[in-house]
Length: 190
Image (cartoon, rainbow, N blue to C red; front, side, top):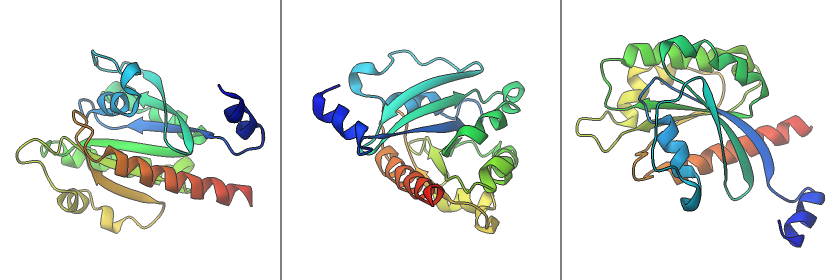
């Protein structure tokens, strides 16, 4: 770390460390998305299914993220909630081409949105509609309707089209998440 970076961190002007939880059903692309968010020289060449959780670190312009990449298989989903209390944001990744599991997605997403450590604290949730490059993938508007998101009134959530393989849509989604986390942190200062 350079002298100016050290000095700016000392005076609170450096990047703020934040914890986020990355959840979603198995095979939705969570780990691939996090891999895309790393710098090119730190990206993994091989992506394997997550067992339990893995911590991935990456930065945006103003924030330094510690992302808890949670396994999406059914036997691990009950562990997601134990990470919400110490997080400042949630990324929920879904496979926009997986029409078969849309009802299951709805149930899992609403459990996250309504969880006491998410809803009562008002932490932002960014929904990444991944795999938009697959023919027949649902649009964000279709997904919003299918998941009943327009009926969900509590909390701060947004939905973004993404493609983990190319990185399309990730910059915009992360800008939104960063902005919402910074607002969240400001409200906690008061």
